[in-house]
Length: 161
Image (cartoon, rainbow, N blue to C red; front, side, top):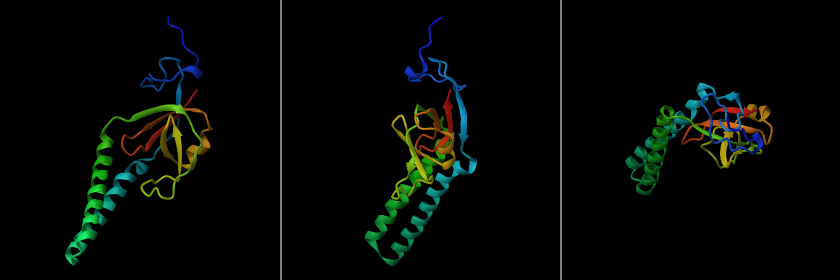
């Protein structure tokens, strides 16, 4: 039998479907999951923005504003692509990120496409989160985050024990 390495030295690179590290045998327990409504917010918001910019494009073309119409066409394409990506990622496997939970802070006021009030870093990746997650986790906890591929919307947070 192979010896297990200590949990604080492990990189947790091999996670089983039961959310257990295969190298150090650390178990990751579910702390928080996103509501079904929260998972539909990005595609709905992007779809509404795409529809609104399409209506502005039609209005601008109808009134003869060429340069402004080009800007609204670009916005329509941008939000339509984001809508398609947000809808298609619902059928793709979730991504996993394991690492220490970083300090949480308020999101940037310029981040208009973010729908969560706070952000935190886990293993170099920035995730959106609610105040509920901040209350449940402590800084430097080893966490496992299941998230959507393109929106990086966390679906579930796990704490390592």
